[in-house]
Length: 193
Image (cartoon, rainbow, N blue to C red):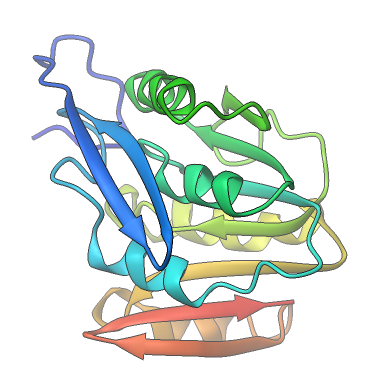
């Protein structure tokens, strides 16, 4: 079985255009086989976008951006600098298609395995982490985020309770001051600084 964090060049392409609306903001993004959010905006991502605090932020990084709905939404809502990273080449291609479709110019999309190609610091890092890539990869994303946050920067995470939300909070409590912003249908939206 292929996972969305793998680059399978033999996987048949089936690109779909998704129209989404979160609160008062409409946007479009493209999906394909082998990329997270294949069937549309998932509930956890929607819950995150409905509850995120974007005030007083100038820069943003979406780690494991998939086909890009988080970065695209934030770019449409704000004037902040937006960077989006993923290891999946197909996901990066879809992000670039979606950026063009939404007429956005303040987004930079590039390939990076966790933070290996990230050199900047951000006011906000968001991740809907690739749970199926394994706990070590998810923990790398959370732990290493601290090195890429500005002094008052915030890490935002969407994770299901049954996929380790409570243990993640406990395991990183010495690095981050975590707050559960909201929880619904088993999803936790967590902010750390």
